[in-house]
Length: 530
Image (tube, rainbow, N blue to C red; front, side):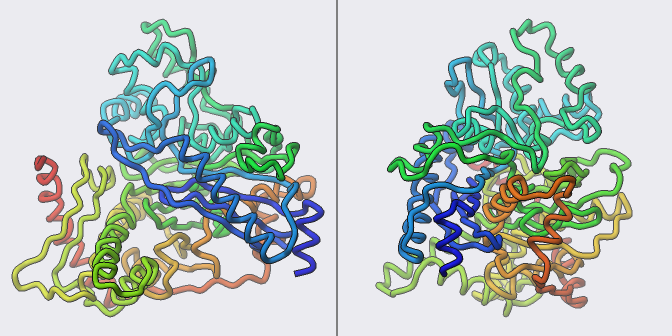
């Protein structure tokens, strides 16, 4: 306690914040890189005029509320106030589209990664650039707006991601970490910048529009892990702490995407390593020793925060439907005037899922709240299907929710392994899916037929990884790589809990998935229901 108090008083702590899909989370690390306090704020995306979006005003409210609760915990535990910090790092959901004019005004709704209305643009760009451009990438949103002749495109001066936006407002710097940047437009790891030839092709594609801008002029500058990315301005300090206790001048590291921070939080940035981020969305990141032999619709090519090639299998839908059902049960519990929390219900769902049959009693949960490109689902329609003779127990139902959450990821990873002959020896999981001990980790391992490991703080994930990136910028020795920093100073002596696939369960899940895949036709047809 004395050491932590001393760290806070001397400004030796680092702060990581992440604007995730359902929570804005902040974590404070001490000089030993262990969490000493945290804060959070719950928010949700909403469908507005057919666009999945969040309010930027709520983003700032969430940052302030999260920081307020973190500061309160610090004062309660350590009897000291946070005045300054060694470094700060900002992370958020990757991809999406935030366009601004020359005065910094937002020109359209913030389009998140969840939007799948860019199919035409993504297909054209993939063909012209000879590079897989996913629906959710920033350049797909930009080009779709160009194809629609949206008037705001002529006023563009800057486009960025959510992390890039928050960092810009805190520091005045229009920069982005390379992992997040690689989800806006393809990057070239040799030049440490956007792919110049692909930039040229894009500019040629829109030459007849006679815009006042060229693509690179409106994109954030690319920075790598460990680089200095500006300092907290007076205005920025008040955006975090309106009370004015937090002082300006604190250095910030490059803002990153939640995929990159997840890799750091699981020590999975070395070649051949991989991790799974399992929350509202669900994705796996596999670090490659060479580029893939060809593009695949199920696989995105991005990079680690220090620039290594990564195969990313991204599913728009993860635990959202689990959360939706938990909320229904919570409403029932409240109506019955019973004293249980929402977290209690989530825990029961995961615990009972472990008791369910390996075939879920022939119950099928399609968790598509939004479109799901991996499964070729254009429009989301969450759906539960069972036969008259299905064994409709709570345990089987709960297990079907978890199966539905991992189904898309299983499809994408199996396709990658089969086509590229990859051997994935282990995946490290983090996120809410792994918070409850047992069920999530075992189901994931058996679904993918790959051992799955977790750390003691599996649920902290992104903000913890972002704080570590901030520490790397502030503390690294000259020439020290991020990989060496993680293995030598962060994860030395920390053990992982590993669960192996259950062979019988693997066999039954493969059979289950055949029926599940056939049922996707019903999921697609359900989109016609108003």
